Length: 105
Ligand SMILES: [Zn+2]
Image 1: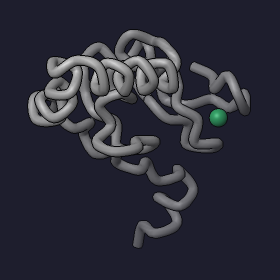
Image 2: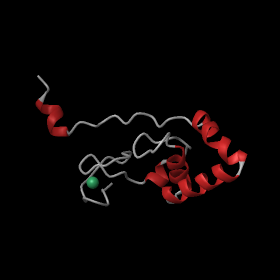
Image 3: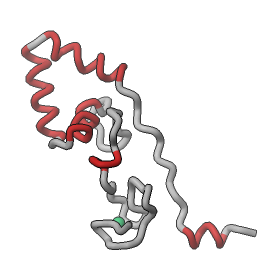
Image 4: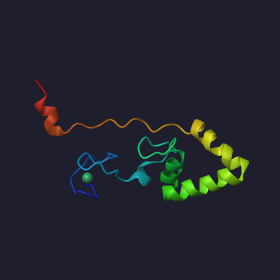
């Protein structure tokens, strides 16, 4: 498949473009509710929900903050979600094909 941003050919199962670093098809590929490692403010709970439901992360944070200030359930839901939600699996940086062959003895 092709990267939508730089137009280069990338792996079909790639989540991130190896050339420009843009996340590819995040809403389609991400089927599980996880806390992303990049772009998080506190624990990545709001970012995880935003990516899972494909909504703006700022909207999720504002709604969550209002809920936390107004209701005890909203206040408790963040640490509970922090504990319950698994962390995103570490992204293994795919080496460039040219560098791979060059280091081969
Ligand atoms: Zn790209």
